[in-house]
View (tube, rainbow, N blue to C red):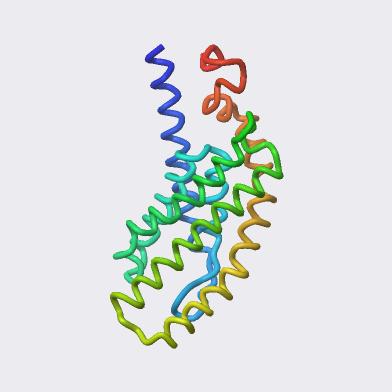
Length: 199
C-alpha cells in the first residue's frame, strides 16, 4: 500500500514539475502594454495545469512556473512570492471546478467555469496588490492610481478572454495525450477502477 502511494506521489510531483516548466516558458510569449502590464500565455498554462492535474497540484504547477519567471526580470523579482500566491489560485479554481462530480477535465462547461473563476480570482488579487502598493507604499496621487488601474483593466479585458479561448482549445488535446500515454491513469487511478489500477 505504501509503495502504491509513493508511486502516485512521484507521478504527481513529476507532473507538477513538467507543467511548472511549461508555465515558466509560456510566460515568455507576451506583448508588453506600456510599463505596467502585458498580455501573455502564462495564465493559459496556469489554467491548464488545474484542469489536467486538479486543484492543488495544478495551482502549484502554474504558480511555480510564474514564480521562477519573475526571477528572469529584475522588475518582477521582488514580487515573486506574491506571484506564486496569486497565480496559484488560477490553477486551484480551474482544477476545483473542472474536477467536480467525478469529472477530470473532460467536461467543457466545467473547464470553462473553472478557467473563468480562476482568472477572475487572480485578477482581483492582482488589482488589490497593485492598489496597496501604489496607495500605501509608493503613495502615488489618486489620479495616477486610477489611470494605472484603467490601463490594467483594459489589459484584463483582452487577457481574460484570450486565456479562456486558448485554454478551452488546448485542454482536450492535452487531456487526450495524457490518457493515451497512461499518465492520466497513474495520476487518477481511482477513476479507472480504484487503487488496483495503480499496478
